[in-house]
Length: 186
Image (cartoon, rainbow, N blue to C red; front, side, top):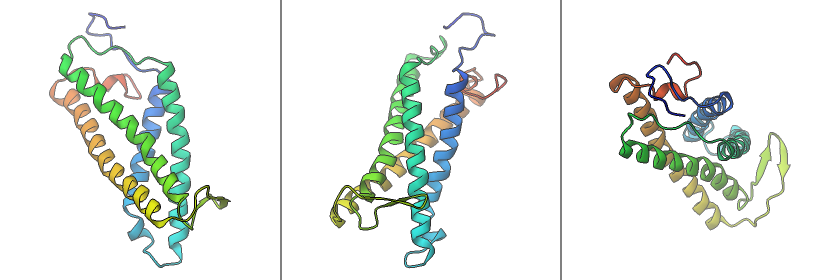
């Protein structure tokens, strides 16, 4: 895929680009929503249950989209790294992308599991889903804590991902960011 022509940029396909941006922006919104839950609907207020269930519902939809994205990615190889990219940067990118995928899977999964060990369960856009686990506050607390810890790790990885893209675009002046940009003129 890689060529010596400086005009050629090995790009991701349209589906991969659309999934990247759609899910990426939705994840940022969902993470912000999660961190702001107590401000949006404080504990003990009537709006709390509705707000929490909206967060759960959106998280489940995102989880399904993430599984679709992962399935797409496993069936479609990404374009080759540019020949000018040092090996250590290629390895760092590979490790950070894998960590992002781990967070993308673990984040909604930990929230879903936590909800199934709570007396509240899940209301998916108003439809009650029967919990498959008993009401075990200690198990709920563990998975909810894991959900929050993953959110913080995810934020760190997202910041690293965006910083790397900015570095490639405005410091290295290479075409790396163009590979995933919606239009070829990044």
